[in-house]
Length: 432
Image 1 (cartoon, rainbow, N blue to C red):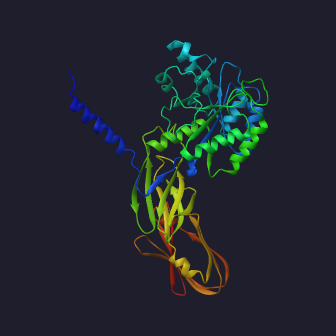
Image 2: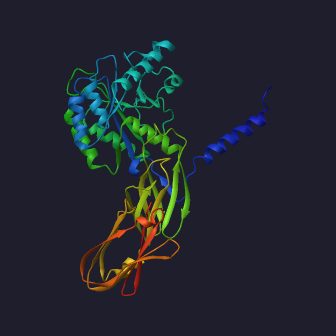
Image 3: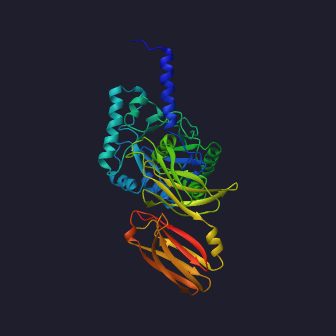
């Protein structure tokens, strides 16, 4: 039966609306184009497993704490032990085919053998590794759909800086480095990454030999080292990521939704979700949310586990920035109005309730008094009921620590109410 054009249009509209609905981000939130809200992403990729990639290039990356990608040709005698060590350390080991043929001259069966055979060889020889990305030999694309059935992305070499979302994730542009390319010296590398900042782009460098190890289009290790030193000094601008991690971040970022499920004076709860396979897509996304200017954040957790965060002020607004894993459970930001602490400032120099969330039966309240004062401390429930009076006495100036047994209130948040000379302050303890 032939479809009516109007019916087809309506179906397409419904599908489009469904797609939009699944990728909505609450207006109070922002997902970073790149990790840590950097201006550009940069990936360094190595082809052909040449002699000094592991012995010369990798130690330079290790020195700065950066990770790189090795696209290996599996029939060319790779050092599996050394690549296993690199993978264990967080570097990516991915496929550059079995025998490095020009895919333009292969049959479908031959292409499949190159694609699947190399992937299987890598996964068989390197434990704990997922071979997820592919680099086309000679940058000649075979069949996108065939490659996509086995890999999440494939790299070519059009010589351009990629968009933050590539037009074709199975044909990602890279820039050839070394004597046969346009990127040879430290200045060339640095100029290219700086060029990407204006467009929030993704720079993928394609490297082969290093220090005349016999590989194609070599670069000098001194130029690489000088450039990576520059990248190390500018980590607030550039995210250095393996090719695979950049791809994962892109796909997660573009398919994730943020929905706020709760918001009160002391706690904000939201969910970061998408429909991707969490066995593959496991890179935390960087998220910002506005918070009240008079708020003091006391903790951030995901699925009950503490996550790192930082507080920023931009254009008279206050933000919390954190990294959260899509589909990783509720993200909870806990805070309190800072007025009480301000009023305490004449007598209280330091206050800390930890661990928060609690990790066992015991929590600690640590505080430093500037002068002698009458201090009372009580625990109350979320409904305001008095659970326990902890202390009511005069404390001398100096550092103090109280040990709190919180085991009887597991599964519910509790509040410590402190009073110094009639001024009240409340600290919330998450008690999972």
